Amino acid sequence: MTDAIFFYLFSALVLGGAIFTVTRRNAVHSAISLIVSLIGVAGLYLLQQAEFLFAVQIVLYVGGIMVLFLFVIMLVNLDQAAKERQFNRQRWIALLCVAAVGAEISYFMRKGAGTFEFAKTAAVSAPAVGGNTEQVADVLFKQYLLPFEIASVLLLVAVVGSVVMAKKRI
Amino acid sequence: MGAITTAHYLALSAALLLIGTIGVLTRRNIVIILMSIELILNAVNINLIAFSHYWQHVNGQIFAIFVITDAVAEAAVGLGILIALFRNKETVLADEVDLLKW
Image 1 (cartoon, helix red, strand yellow):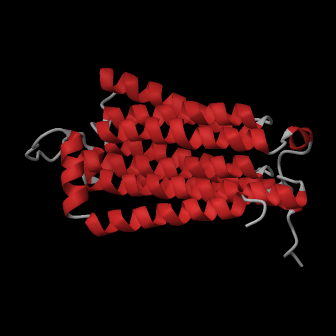
Image 2: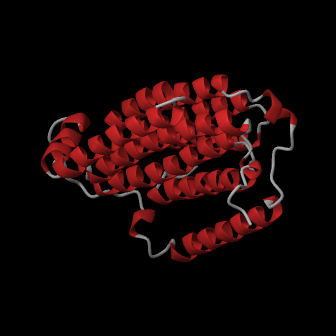
C-alpha cells in the first residue's frame, strides 16, 4: 500500500516535471522542472532497492549535469531565444508520429499483459549477499571490468572533446 | 490502488520516453533538446532498474550506470558544441543552423 502511494507520487513528479521541461518558454524553468523529474526518478530507484543508483542519480544528475546545464544557460544568452517562436514548423507531424508510437506501445502492452510474466508482483528470490552497493561493486569489478575501463576512456574522450569544442583558440 | 507491478514501471517509462521524444522533435531551443535527451535516457534507466528488481539481479543496475556515464559524456560534449555554435553563429535555435541543408 505504501509502495503504491509512493509509486504514484514519484510518477506524478517524473511526468509533471517532464511535461513542464518540454513546454516552458524560459530555459531556466525547464532546467528546474527537469531537476524535479530527475529527483522523482531517483525516488523510483529507491522504491526498487537500487540504493546505490539512487545516490548516483542525485549526485551525478542533479548535482553534476544540471549544474552544467545551468552554467551553459548562463553563458549562452537565451533572452533573445525566449522571445521567439518556441516550436518548429514540423511540430504537428512530430506529434502525430509520437501519438502513433504511443498507440503502438499501449496496444502491445495491453495485448501482451496476460502473457507477460512480469505483470505479477512475485519476484524470483535470490540469495542476497551484502548490501546493494556491495553487490553492484562485485559484479561491476568482476564481470564488467573491461566495459568499466572502456567507459572511463569514453569519459576522458568526452572531457578532451568538450574542452576543445568550448575553447576559443586551440 | 492495487499492487505495483513491473508493468506499471514499463508504462511510466514508455510515457517518459514519449514526452522526451516530443521535446526533441518539436522544440527549437538546443538546450531544451539536450534536456529532452536526458529524459529519454532516464526512461531507459527506469526500465533497466524495473527488470533488475524483478529478476533480483544487479546486472540491470550495472547497465544503468553505463547509461548514466554515456549521458554525462553526451551532455558535456553537446554543451561544448552548443557554446562553439553560439560563438560562431549567435543562435541557439536548431532550425536556424541549416548550413548543410539544401
